[in-house]
Length: 465
Ligand code: C2E
Ligand code: MG
Ligand code: MG
Image 1: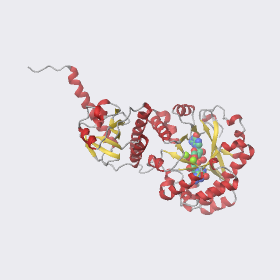
Image 2: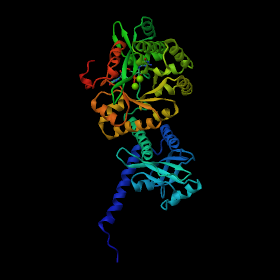
Image 3: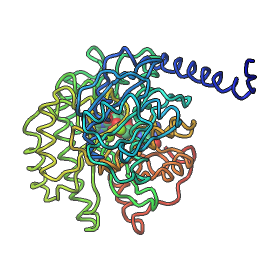
């Protein structure tokens, strides 16, 4: 006589089938299996290997039958059968799986032989999810020694790295959706060869001292104390009024005038640092940051030039910071790396500007010696839009912390963004909510505030322009 099935027995496989279909369609929309490897993935597996001192790290995405390895650290692996794999364990668990000693673990079927052959004794694996929460793949660290139990913080870090993978997928999907094939063009990328200003206009402006530096305070978020300033160039044009750098830096880069303009900016900022120190010795603790363009990095003598300026103005290297975007580094990554190394040895701070807008941010973050990561304004603006954008900022902050870097959030305009960033543990920020870029004399007034503490901010809309 056939056995009667209870409704539960019917419904469980149906739900699993449904879940698998949803998972496969999320995988298809991530379009990850047949694409070229993302450099950011390699950065993530490498980070995981170094952070956890793991012997092998695998990042894979699973279809119905296989786990496709998209990045590995250690032994080269391209794909694995899905049956009996660690991925299946993660999927069944619906979350992380930590096995400190596989000898004690009876449930590993397919992978056990391989793991034994590799003398792997322990592993921890976390899911990589789609934006809707489907488990697309897993990030796994393996050790040849049995591991002590993973503490919660460590597991959280591994999950953050898996979230970073998910964010890269999401960023890629967005890029495809808006039909762009590269990073958002920054002020340094625009092509402006045929429009104003041309080289003679820029030359004249420099000779006639029409450039000025404005400064925007950078604050410690919990106290609102000014800890630094970012120098932002303006062109005070006799007819056109105050011209934004967005409207002339790209042209200056293209015609080469960026080199003398950049030299002027560096010297002017150093001069101003000295003046603020004369006004009040306590201002020595401030760091003034100057933006540098790609062409300035292609000069091997940049570090010598900076050193000479520090000596000329009698300021400490820690009083100066240099900001650069990823795109300015990839033009000539080799020279950039050498120049950054010399600047680092000199003791000036190196800040990665506009973080998150480049193609493979993580890759550069890991390979270049930055002290500070500045989260691009576009992320800060979206932070109040929901869980996904918030998560991106949270993982950037976690990652920077794991790499021993400080984080500055750019473009804070609302109380809500301010509160959320504090909750996420972001230490520093700048934005119209606290202060707009302003002439040096106005900064001097702010620096005279008790404790250099800015007042409780008004919403940006109530602030004067
Ligand atoms: P950046 O280095 O990312 O500078 C931040 C920009 O965001 C500044 O624009 C600043 O005024 C603006 N900003 C700050 N807080 C807020 C906010 O709350 N809301 C909004 N909407 N914007 C905010 P700015 O001064 O127009 O500079 C634009 C870009 O031009 C800079 O971006 C930097 O890449 C470049 N730049 C500025 N000065 C120099 C320079 O001396 N040399 C070079 N090479 N580039 C420069
Ligand atoms: Mg900047
Ligand atoms: Mg920026």
